[in-house]
Amino acid sequence: MKPLWIIAKRELAGYFSSPVAYVFLVIFLLVAGFLTFTAGAFFERGEAGLGAFFGWHPWLYLVLVPAVGMRLWSEERRSGTIELLLTLPVTTWQAILGKFLASWLFLALALALTFPVVLTVNVLGEPDNGAILAGYVGSLMLAGAYLAITCMTSAMTRNQVVAFILAVVLCLFLILAGFNPVTDLLVRWASPAVVDAVAAFSVVTHFDGFQKGVLDSRDLLFFLSVIGFALFATGVIIRGHRAG
Amino acid sequence: MIRIDNLVKNFGAKRAVDGISFAVERGEVVGFLGPNGSGKSTTMRMITGFYPPTSGRVLVGGHDVAEAPLATRRLIGYLPESAAAYPDMTVEGFLQFAAAMRGLEGEARKKAIARVVERCFLGSVLRQSIDTLSKGYKHRTCLAQALIHDPEVLILDEPTDGLDPNQKHEVRNLIREIGRSKAVIFSTHILEEVDAACTRAIIIDRGRIVAQGTPQELRAMSATAGAVTLQAHGATAERLSALGRVESLDGAFRIYPRDASQAAALAAAVIDLVGREGWKVQGMYSERGELDEVFRRITLPDTVQK
Image 1 (cartoon, rainbow over the protein chains, first blue to last red):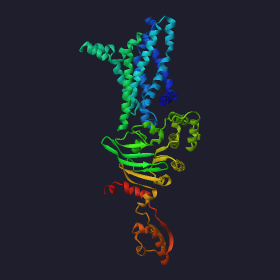
Image 2: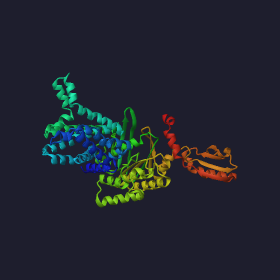
Image 3: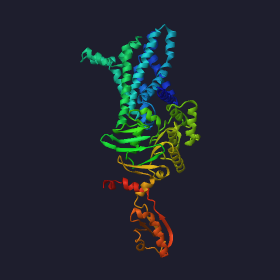
Image 4: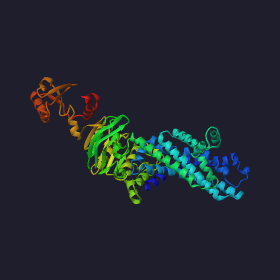
């Protein structure tokens, strides 16, 4: 297990060795703030909750998470360091998990820095802090799911931009499958059972529960399955390159 | 230490390595020669476990690379052809990472890093980030990484590529020194390196071993091996032809021995003849044979087809 943490540590340190990490954190916090307070009409709602904050996360992460994860494997392949990494005494899974966890931790840090929002609602009213905590857990799971998909697209190509675009497109599908305007459209020509089945694949459907403060094991399982599946696919893709 | 049995690697329909078998023991330095795309790097990548073989086996230290990849990787130090290193890290940070991945900690790690820094002459760039280094330093940083755990088996893919002549010399000495107690395989395009560092050379062409032996044995396969070149005032091809086949070069003659058994005595016979004829000798040498001539003859497409 030890090599996994050494890889994670190296990867995490890699984020902070250039200004990009700090720029990312600032952009993340600015956009999250703008969406919550201006576009989300936080004050006008008059609610002591963070619906205006969490509601935007599937869209906010759509661009920002692939930006964090796009280099994970494509950069290794482009520069050839993948040959070095995978001939060290580590298994492919340790390398994949180590890199994934490093990026996830970085996203968790970004998310943790949004704590002033929590302070704000607590000063202004008496929110259900349990629901807020559930929202944070859900948000982290959502970020993890997007990130795992980005890992997978990143393993597919040497080009970070291609990895980014592929990840955005795949994550967009996961949003749209349960996005109200889309499901409303689907209802016109498909049976409700089909619409529900499609929506069951959506991150929005499963993220809703967390936002309401419900920690449902099925929602948790959904996100963990997406992460597990995407990381497994990453492993298959990396093996595929080497098998020729 | 390394045993390779009938190794095959296909990439799609293309066969990159086609049934290679050889063994390397401790104390041997084996030079891998071959034209570009002949399967050298692919073979090395299969030994390190980066590529799984299509068929055949690789044993390192008695472990099968396919079955016990972690055990074999612990024994191996590997310098890939790209000599890649993480560009955003400093040399020191990168070596720390490599040492940590090899399970070196505390005092042992410090010592290991100090040792490879000295051996690879990296002292002056320790705190520099890798993407600001020149090619030679990058290359040596990656080489240092391969040596950090003092591996039993060293696989070096073009270790002297991109180095200046002094650095090449140092790296060759290093390889020879390590080869006294470890098993080393390195690939190269530079034939003089085979002489300088190898105990044995293997020539690969189109995925097959086409020749192998000590540098002397390979040179003896050269057409000029054993011939005597004479530059002397008054010498004529006609007189010399009594000793063997004579080739006229620019102002000199090259005499080829009739067969291998005669080769040893040829130089003495030429000196004898020169003395009897009273020719004034300006130069005379025994040809040891040219490695690059052997290499070209073996690996050129038309000669192989025969």
